Length: 625
Image (cartoon, rainbow, N blue to C red; front, side, top):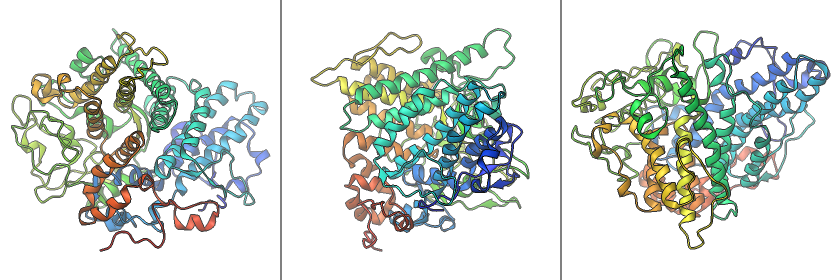
């Protein structure tokens, strides 16, 4: 597929009976340009069939792969796996040898998804006039879903390429060209915000089918999470005159999500409610946030890591806000990207050699059993205490220098009952069994999470820290509006903003470190946080620990570089993975443009309006072997 003519990338699924069919792959596909439009768009079922295709196209292996490669593999979290050559171009990308000819620069899957959404938004309104069963409320929900999914794809493109071709018009026949100049990334974000804001309250807060719809379909809290992310990214532009206002808006959008989930938690725990889940009581009582507990009985290492199993094993957890869902069975779409990228098993039950593994500089030395004092030490060692469950559920330590990725690949991670005083034992942290018990091929249904509660909490913390940094200036500007969190007063000083951000970060950290609830040295200390840089480092490290391998890390580093107006921190973080080539890559890293991918060479040939990212050129072999 190319950008000159997306021949109907908006392909229609044959009529679907229900939204639970999102994951079915046994459907007839019809090119849109072969459908007589006036005969197709007749009723509610026709509209819903195309809405379903918006979701289903996100399950495509190329879509998930692009999201993971662009947002995670380029970061300091990832290095080459045993089968790196199995994914064309990944080996070069991981060495810093990214060229415009690399197939991983292909953005086709994103534009396929965008065109599905454009098609829905163009033709769904006419159905309302023809089908009395398709109500205004139905139309508004459909519009919100399509706009949110479209925004997620465009946002991913902007974070990856910065400036990209942009249009809200669908391609419905072979005569319509999709040849556009690349629009500035920040301008695209402005349009996406303006597009989402008026429809953010259209989707329901809650659907009746929890697992099939409330995490795999756009809800109201998913709209607000997306808006928070968009505002946070836009505010990260160092020269943006509305930085303060947009950080404030990011906080307000996060507030909606957080307070909604607090209300859901309180309702679930009301007397006589039918469903009870194991939440971390300590985190709720001390920090005020409803997070699933890693341990059934904190401090005993009993049954952990329970939260991991719910969020990444089963999927559709309480904490999930929006995820790409997959289901098991012979006739359903499986998440083959996770199996190929991180690890899994084939149909014969043999382990698949993965394309990627955890960076070997992330845990240079095996933590000893006595490592129980938290240290905000280095980017190269995000885990400084042995009590952090994420140091076991994210990846496996190997004395031979290989670090298999475990997140998403295990449907159930049972660490046993080792350890003393509730601490995770060294033998548990580095399992002696050589190969992790990966998902079977029939069970390759790991959810791909777009937004979850702790992500939103840490977005809010980052926005608050950035607001505090702006307040801590000679101008001392006032906040645009009062910001309130459940149980807190409004705040308008840098110290109060830092306090609230620290509270959010601690809630996330303490859930993953239940033994730190009784061992104070294992947790960060507010008294040690005295400067803006201290807090920025704290939130960045916590986002890295919490969201590792979820496609967030690289974009977090880019967002910080945008905010600082230079690539100094970005280059320090990323360059270590390139080994001998790092010096040559560092020369390029001084350019802000280097953070973004080059356009695929073939796209530049087809679209004469595209101008290649100046950090890349066809003649420049900037890494010599």
